[in-house]
Length: 232
Figure 1 (cartoon, helix red, strand yellow):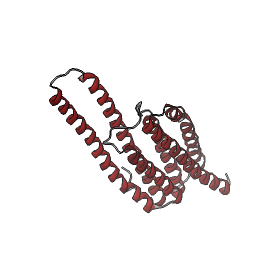
Figure 2: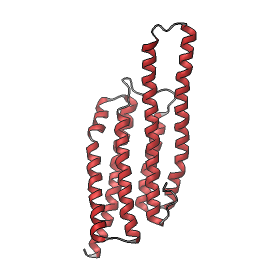
Figure 3: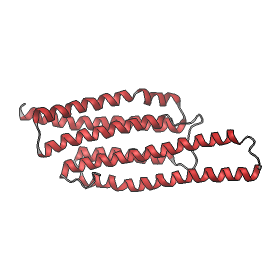
Figure 4: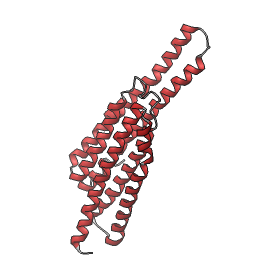
């Protein structure tokens, strides 16, 4: 393959990964809305559309494989191809997490009041978008900034999870003290547990979205500077 065509394929690979990132972010934002409002139509749109993300991932996988097999890239070109493959894998998994989140919305929408779901979810999505932008621009400092933000997200998720569980335990003790009876308790407890379960699952998956953002930033940094400091 002439060098000019080879370079065009590398540039196209990078562009296609960025486009996939934008597409995943759109689906993720729709999932946030579905989860927060309990909108079944929005949830169905995200869940049934997951195959489109998978198709994009498989196309990128094929392109990376072909470039590796036929062109045997070295040095920076090799890091670009391998980083692109790993980043597309993380984006596909963010798409999977979006389908999870879309399905967590309750019948009345929303989550436990101790969970600031929208801010947590949006911040995690912003981290993914910023990591993809760092990959696109080849910006090492932006990669490190994304990774540093993950500590704050993890801490906020931890506090939210603890608040949900603590509130459930305190509410249950208060009901026991007030009522002095178990009458009607199973139904109330089942409803409370459903709320808690959905909230804890949502927090867990938002935290994982942040982890994938760090993975993307780590691969982008390795691509740019041959530096594996963020790769766990």
